[in-house]
Image (cartoon, rainbow, N blue to C red; front, top):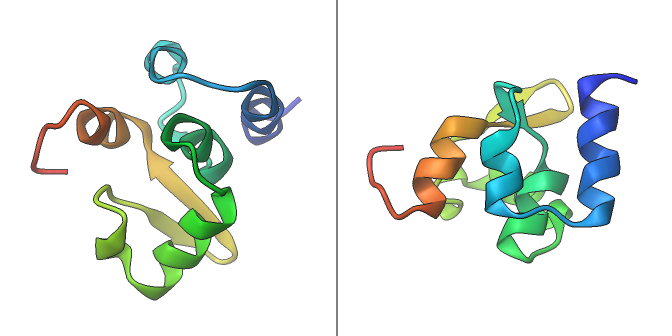
Length: 83
């Protein structure tokens, strides 16, 4: 199972910020971030493409994929600036 498939499976189960902190992946998927934020992952994907500043945390778009740097997302969730 790839890291992406594993994150998607975990996101279906419900993830917390503590779960994200314990991960060792460099990036997380919108599905994982959405579980922590309590929103629809599609909203994150659309916002990433239309106006990244709406999110408050950095995103990386590679072709059709949206990836979120895990450590920057954690800092954002903990209220630290400078993401």
